Image (tube, rainbow, N blue to C red; front, side):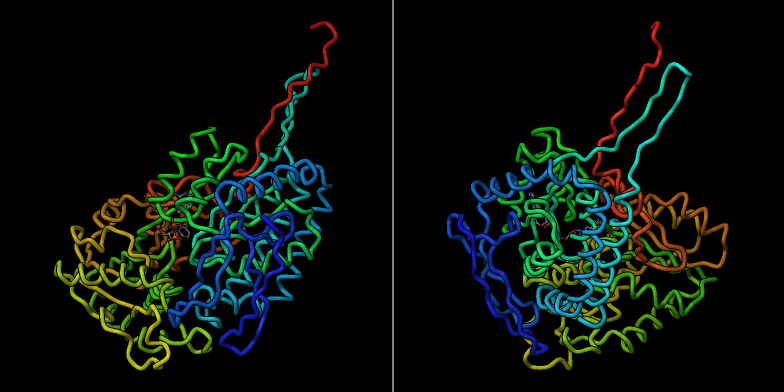
Length: 505
Ligand code: NAD
């Protein structure tokens, strides 16, 4: 493994040029692959390769990253809280100063619309660093005085080296959530998603610039099945914070048993959204679209299973179609008017088209979108991995798209009459990430929020995220929570101390 001075000058579709680091990041330096392996990065809009990155080997290079984090742990752990806090604030400032370039690289890496998705994502990252920076000098335990002969107290102590595994759908944003580990005094090795490795390497330069000690934050680039797998099995890693598919989450839970690693798993979902006759109609239409069609439906908590009460069923579907026609323009992510870019890869595009094809074959009624290529997109985008926002109605519980996570811009709509039956149907699914309800009846909304089997419930909105509020699911959607004060509990051990003050006992 050698230190890499290799950067590639990349011209973004906006005309901006920047220098992309090609190596992975260990000890505040970029490195080349010890076995000279490289991995292509593809622009989802054109399907063309834009550069090749160094792959970290799952032995020599991963060991070096873990060793760097292990060596940095005692230093970082004992760094005064105010110094750590100020470094987080400095990093947030640097992200803010680099907001536009980070957003552009994120759009280049993922195909996300720049104006309507990526800029917002980077804004939330800045919030996240400030939010968790603010916690650093407020992390404390409890004390209990059972009698004048004894004092008991607790410490919240960092765990050690944490492995953080990130998916492709919100690469930088979901990375920032896992910086909670570093806020709690741990050091970390991050593994980026193989489809979206660019932005995190650019961001790594800001970490060094902010003044974080070498080894606190490391990034390895490579594939899940070997590099991710080796990270999970590494004996010097004491915790894995994973976001990704339920399939990989299950494997990780098994493999992490090797040294009884602590785990948080943020996995897939099939979240319901229930629209009652008494809803605020326009509000329900708008949020239903946001809940499944933003980020091209590549949202873990996307409200893809829509139940509409019989009284407004037809009118609601018509309104969804009008709303999509009016606001969800498909196109070039670097065009400010674009709301819908391509999916992440050709494989993902084919997977989603297959779900659409299965739904048609199984007899679901296609109302909007479907298998055809989007109309009126420019010629140069024809090779992009686009899928049109798609609506199916009259979907029933036995249909595949009713049950499985599509992870694309596809909504299934089902008619319902009664509260109890719709609640039962919502809960009859392997996942339990989010759920949304639209009604003006506060009792109904409150009972729904209490009884729904999900980690999160939105009343009269969908997929609203706040740094102060925990995010995560139950059942096959995962284990543990990120964000908010609850998110801190993932990354510390609680130590109990019993202090005996009695001289005679
Ligand atoms: P994925 O599981 O294929 O990959 C996610 C990450 O895990 C990648 O970095 C990948 O390289 C790595 N990985 C894959 N197999 C691994 C293994 N055996 N060991 C270790 N690491 C491995 O998921 P994806 O396709 O990138 O993301 C989409 C999925 O993520 C969807 O199912 C979505 O619902 C889920 N997701 C969940 C949340 C949440 O907070 N619950 C958020 C975003 C995405």
